[in-house]
Image (cartoon, rainbow, N blue to C red):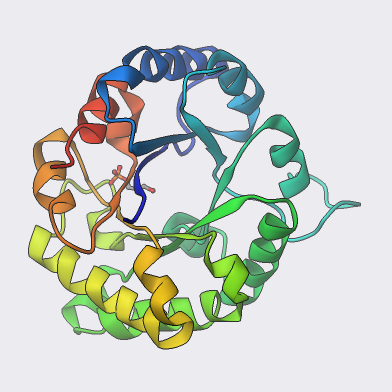
Length: 251
Ligand code: 13P
């Protein structure tokens, strides 16, 4: 049985105290979500310590939204994987399309970040996905394959066993346009096939999350698909009730 995961990517939203409030709301409703669903919140770096403290004992995991390519040293403004792991984070989102698009993150950068994540026992949530132009040109399979080959294929078998993939079509992020459940299933199955070609049967165990305008009203239909193992949630993760409702959307 693959792990079911609902992860909230708060992006650059909420002030620290608001983040703690939001985390408390998620913790308060955790019991309503089936215990076989892993809930993860990914606040901004500045909120991590406070959020982790407020979640104490609540069975809600915490992830960071990024980490540095280097272990430590003279890298002004960067936050290392060791720093976030020391706070109690278990996960780190890497390769989000916003980082690729606005901060020029390429596979070379992401390989270094993945290495830092594993060196500090963090589970990467590695994001792939095509933009609108690529989808319209029917290049979405090719784009996702390349994003996997250039980064995930460099992992060892042991590292691969500790990986979460998120498929996030850029045209569906924050736009209110969701991929249909059929579109999600089609590409999730393809992603799993690509992973199988490199890692064999271990690909069956790798959680593949859908992200892009996922909300309580559409999560159930998407999560019901065979190769969709949960979601990476942006906007709807900023309201505890919506986030929890998505957590309850598995059949
Ligand atoms: P939205 O749910 O706001 O579309 O964002 C998705 C996302 O980018 C999560 O990482």
